[in-house]
Length: 122
Image 1 (cartoon, rainbow, N blue to C red):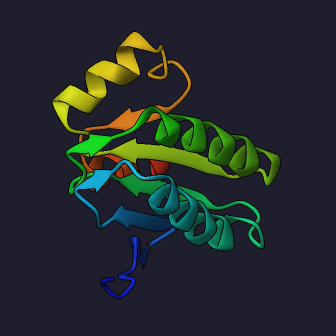
Image 2: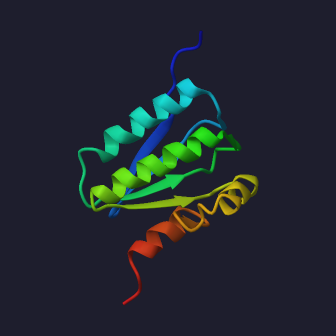
């Protein structure tokens, strides 16, 4: 069995917390559980968080991940925080469109676009 590697990397930039998913495939239940634990440990204690999920490395994900994202988004909004997604693979984006999750999530081309949305020009 391989040692557990971190599922996410976290970076704090300006007024945003960027969570980058490190796995190319997020398919297995134990991967999703580990992901949930990692992400919840960031959002549960925080209020007024600007959270950016960077999917740049992710090529495949299961429908269970979509469920996880919805649970995370509910928690984020309960904490009066914001959640943005970016760098979503075009094939995965199609799934977001089909499931109408593009209406649920704020989706940006990349991290810079997501950060720019937090700092609208005066």
